[in-house]
Amino acid sequence: MDRLLARLEPLLGRCEGEPVALDGGITNRNYRVRMGGSDYVVRRPGKDTRLLGIDRAVEREAAEAAHRAGVAPAVCAYVVDEDTLVTEFVDGRAMTPEGVRANLPRVARLLRAVHACAPLVATFSPYRVCERYLETTRRRGGDIPERILVAADVAARIEAALGTPQRLVLCHNDLLAGNFLDDGDRLWIIDWEYAGMGDVWFDLGNISVNNDFSVDDDTALIETYFAVCDEPRLARVRLMRAVSDWREAMWGVVQQTVSDLDFDFAAYADAHVARMLDSDWEEWLDAATA
Image (cartoon, rainbow, N blue to C red; front, side, top):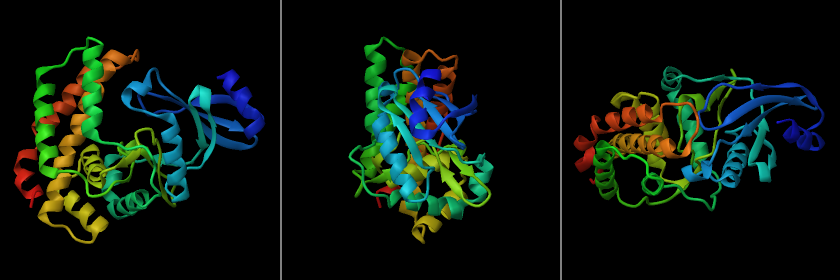
């Protein structure tokens, strides 16, 4: 960190005080650093994150696009050989799932701004990501529980029912409550490492399942986002909730072979695959194809 800060000083000014570790996140380490009279967040990547499908150059590009749209903090520096991103520090509080649900109109407008950003080259498909995670796990001799294979079949059925997205938009793809900041005046979205051109329905299903939305919450989200909610739209969000949990489960599976962090990735995977398989996905298949 001392070496990195010395490299940043010509860009951002003299370092003032010690870096302060920020809570949140599993894979990376984030620090609040004061340099040249301003506060920044220095994001140090975890080990072998490329095996999780993360491209740090794409993360930077997505964060810059989101900042231009007024959605994300400014990117202030990027140290290429260290894969380290430096962004403006936002003095706000991380939201909770309850807070996200209570601010559905504001959140929906924020997502519409993201999805209207200029396109990137990189794409994101939860199905292809999970296929790569399975391949990496097998190549490294990792354990693949039987329920994971059952879930893979479910995901294939959902993909077949939903078909190819009609258009791709910039998606965040990791809409946990902790990735929303409220500074008292406005909301921000942070942590763009999984961003790419993807399916708007995945972002909507992702925010839904990660923040414990009910069917009524999903209806309100769709009505705010599209101005109307019908059964096929609602079905797509409910199905993408399951796909989002499938992606999270596979993330936990591959992390067991990739990460050296002291974290129970097996329990994480088990929890998400159980929620996927126990969800209402099967009830919505026919409606989604209407």
